[in-house]
Image (cartoon, rainbow, N blue to C red):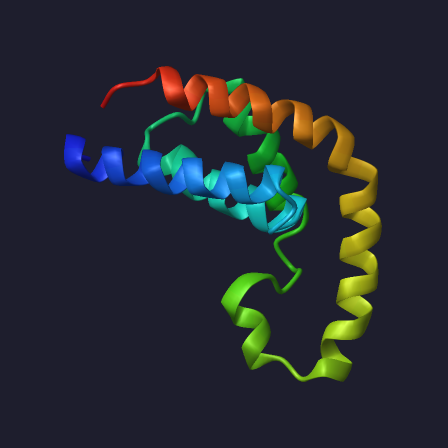
Amino acid sequence: MGSTAKIEAQKALTIAIEAFLTSKIGVVEFSRCSSTAMHALEQDGNELFRYFHAIDAQTDHFPVGAVRNLWAANALKPHDTEREAVENALRDVALIKAHELLGWNKSQQF
């Protein structure tokens, strides 16, 4: 991937981290964004990304983001209840890891 694409992925990651840190998106949605950035930035071996990638892999059945618009409200309810429980259990550590990832992200030049 060229430098321009990596710079765009890095910007998208910053936006996602800040959205997560300000509670605009949850742990699951942020983990999806982080996994996308991990691949785009070629950081598959980076432990900061791998933490969120593991969450993404374990929660990929939850509808988050724009895809929610394609679901009926009654179909979302049980998934939302389960997702909220998972997010509550993961939030504290995920916030710490997100701060670390933000620091890493700001230190990189592509």
